[in-house]
Amino acid sequence: MKQLSFFRSIPAKLLLIHLMNFIMFVTIIVVAFCLFHYTEETLTTVFSDKIDRVAENAQIGRELTRVIADTNLLMSRFYGREDILKTEGKRLLSETNALITKTKDRALKQALNAYYDKIQKLFNQCRIVNRIMGDIEARDRKISNMLTGLEETISEKIRNKIIEGKDVSVMEQLTFMTADYRATFPKITILFTKLGRKHFESSSEEEEKDCPLLILLDELRLKLRTLTAPAPDIIEHGKNLRTEVDRYRAEIVRFHEIAAKLKTRLDETDAAKDTLLQLMERTDKGLFQTVREVKEGLIRQIFSGLMAATLLMLLMALMVGVLAYFLNRSITRSISNIITGLQQSSVNTLNASGHVSLASHKLSEGTSQQAAFLEETAAALEEIDAKVSQNAASASRSYDHVESATDNIRQASHTIEDLGRSMQEISEASQEARKIISMIDGIAFQTNILALNAAVESARAGRAGAGFSVVAQEIRNLAMRTAAASKNTAEIIATALGKIQHGAKQVSQVGQTFGNMETDARYVRTRLKSVAGESDEQARGISQINMAVSELGGWSRQMPQTARNCPSRQKS
Image 1 (cartoon, rainbow, N blue to C red):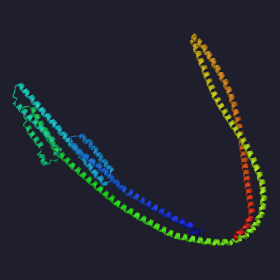
Image 2 (image 1 turned 90 degrees about the vertical axis):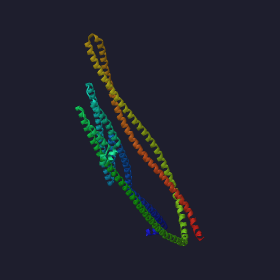
Image 3 (image 1 turned 180 degrees about the vertical axis):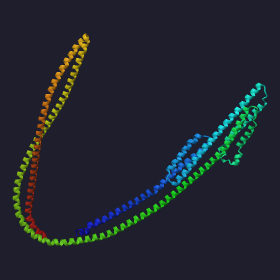
Image 4 (image 1 turned 90 degrees about the horizontal axis):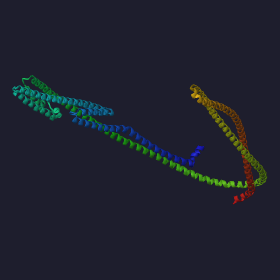
């Protein structure tokens, strides 16, 4: 019943209204927090992976573009420069391998592996091209040296024949032929350098047959076949030259083949590069499309969440409004009931006032008698109050005397403690003195031994050590007197130390006695303080009782007059 009446009261209804407002406010906060949490979770779980992949592809794309540009630059610079090919090729392969390790996309990893294989084969083919080119240059230098050697041999033959007076016309023809060879071969070298790698890469089999370089080599071979002479060493030079030219031509043909393979490797590398770039472009487009779809889905989900939260808050506001309306009506009804009850209570009060006037006459008679008794009680309490106040003053004076005695005992106890510490310090100093005397005794003993050693040495020295023997004897006597004096001093200090320790024990016992006296005095002081406090409390209590009795007396004296005035006021 009490719980039902509580919920029907006005404060309970107001509390219920405030509670509903609080619940609505908390609900709005919870809905907003859940919505923000959902949005944050969606952004972190959905967008994080996609954005990471976009960033990864962008970084890989930048690094791959740099690798491709460096590869193209190396292809334009490697020809005849093995050192650059070795260092830059190793770096580019390492960077490509790092890209393969870094990427997480399986298709992109496969494309990078294919590109890695292609550029590795391309660099190997470039090394072969440089090696063949080096062989050709070495062969070129060898043929030039052989032509120089042939000229020197012919010149030597001519000089010998001139010295011998023989015909040198044949040898002079050989000189012109050798000069023609030397004029033809530099043309071959210059033409090889002028044609360059691009010519050998783009030449087909038909163009290879019509290659001007091979035509010049064939002409040189035909010219070398006409190199005949009666001298066998010149014939041998001619054979060796034809052999080297044939080898030179074979290496040029091989260079055609190697350059064609290099062109094939370049085309394969370009194809792998195009495939890789197209794959990265498709991947980026797919990622951007996915991010766009996820963004649109997230916007739809956030809009749906906002609509649901708005509907929920509107529903809560409607419920609170309806409940507030009914509670307002209930509060109005309760206030009307209270006003009706107050009117009824005023009528009942008028009826009860008649009964009060009858009771007031009886109260007037009883209070007159109580006033006389209260006056007698007040006189007795005043006497008790005087006695208790006197006892409290005596207890307070006794407490002051005991507190003074306690302070004196405490000071004496502190003095005894200081005396004990001083005796302990004297004992410690005596111990240090004993150590010093012991050290002096040891020094005297060592001095005595040294004096004995000196006496022995002076005895060995004979007359030369006689004076030193007297000094050693005096030192020994002095050491013995020092030892005796230190021994006596040690005994005196030991005796004094024993007396100091005995005195320290007695001082400690006196300190304990003073401590016990201080404890007893503290206990007596505490008890006296308690007695004084209780006496003061009793005095204050009796004084308050006396004041209350006096007030009751005054009230009792006023009560009859008030009781007599009540009927007249009631009538009015």
